[in-house]
Length: 299
Ligand code: NDP
Image (cartoon, rainbow, N blue to C red; front, side):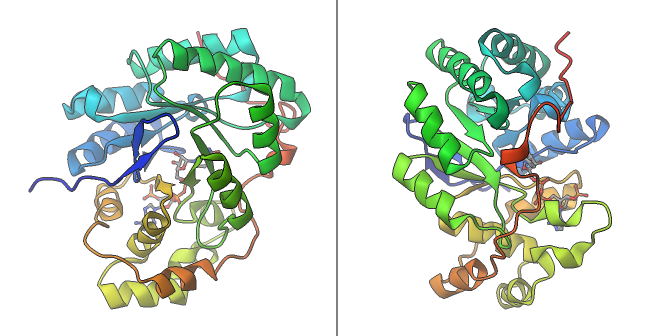
């Protein structure tokens, strides 16, 4: 069977990005290569990793083993805050390219804003502008930026971020930030698209996430799809880019089998109405080297 082709989203610099990809946060290095290889064989073309995930090498290995041509792929990685500042960002970026075993990435993101050291955040983005200019990044963007962070960044730099990757799932739909993205021409990329961050935190269980919500499970029954497929379809109907993570082959396939049905406008609206307005992940306003002391090893 020929794998389905992922719909594409247009970025503000003319590059196109698949609207669905595989995330690998918390994918153990020893399982990441197989997960990436499986996903690419299933038809995925976007892989989302980060220096801080400590599995860029295994992502690169999965890409090579898949046999899929590099030109067909969309590889995203992210700069961690321990490498913010202009010179440090260059070292961090080149270490990511080396670990991935690629000569360019398709999207390079600042992983987090660091509000207490925003000059270093700006300097890191200015370094990313040079990677864009020299062709080693086909697009650059940010992650976990608020509207205010975006506006400040845009005032002080030359390139409008192509993407802001933020927590987004049926229980946290970020309507105000999405409006700002639309105004600024920034594509919304959804992390924890299945609401995983509500479920995998210690002491939680599936009932805290949207996959057991009756609105979602009833639509799943109606369409003969799974709750995860309904939620991913909701992302696609909105024009978000979703990057669900799994290390299980059957779920990797399930999460990509979403191109043979659509949701009606009122069904999309019913899922929109599930928004609780409460994030599951960390508040980007409080992120700093003190609260997140992890340091990426670039040796
Ligand atoms: P997801 O919403 O993708 O959920 C992942 C969790 O759901 C995992 O525990 C996975 O388990 C499980 N799962 C996957 N598929 C299914 C399914 N079909 N049915 C039921 N359960 C399923 O959350 P993540 O937080 O992992 O986010 C996805 C990606 O977003 C990350 O991998 C990363 O690339 C990115 N991300 C970015 C962040 C940022 O700050 N920029 C922060 C967090 C994530 P299993 O593997 O066992 O199948």
